[in-house]
Amino acid sequence: MSANLAKRESEKIGHRIICNIVSPGSRVLDLGCGDGALMEFLVNEKKVKAQGIELEEEAIYKCVERRLNVFHGDIDSGLPEYKDKSFDYVILNQSFQEVKKPEVVLKESLRVGRKVIISFPNFAHYSARSQIFFKGRSPVTTSLPYEWYNTPNLHFLSISDFISYCNKKNMKIEKSIYLAIRKRIYLFPNVFANIGVFLISR
Image (cartoon, rainbow, N blue to C red; front, top):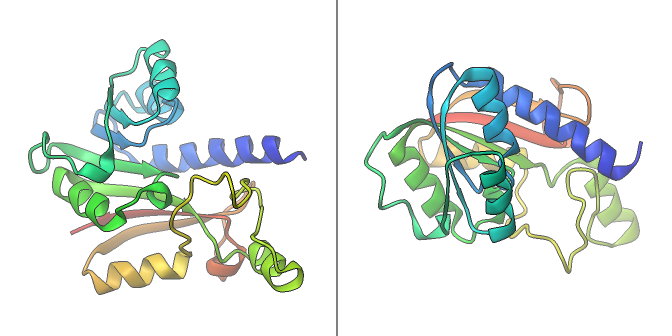
């Protein structure tokens, strides 16, 4: 399987997992929504009332083509235009590791959303570890497909890092799901999972 095909397969599985978490008819805010593929999926499958925020103009155009409600904005600046608990779910799908101020973004997400869904690539996956150990190179994997010089990722966290952070900040992890390319991982996710998906709340 090519890297691009594997990445698309992983994205589809991730979208389905998030869709299974979200309740029908919910109010959803997708932060760093990209081209709107996840929002479109949630609208079609769960009839959610979706709104997205995205920084990249090309991605916004794709959202508009999908007839999605999206605003241009930098989520690192916070979400001052939204009232507390304006949404049932705030989603950070593969965007949390790309923000400059993760603590600000997470705090604001928990303020405006009743629950927050976060998914991110696990930088402690065994394939990444082996590349660093044996090759002495920055890892390139299915869930981390970028070279060091063109990666959008700013924070290199693992599943264990995020769990520890939530415990430290008294954030409740209501659900955690760990994914490989085509299957769920139940044992030693910090080693074998490519992606972690978490449902958190205060």
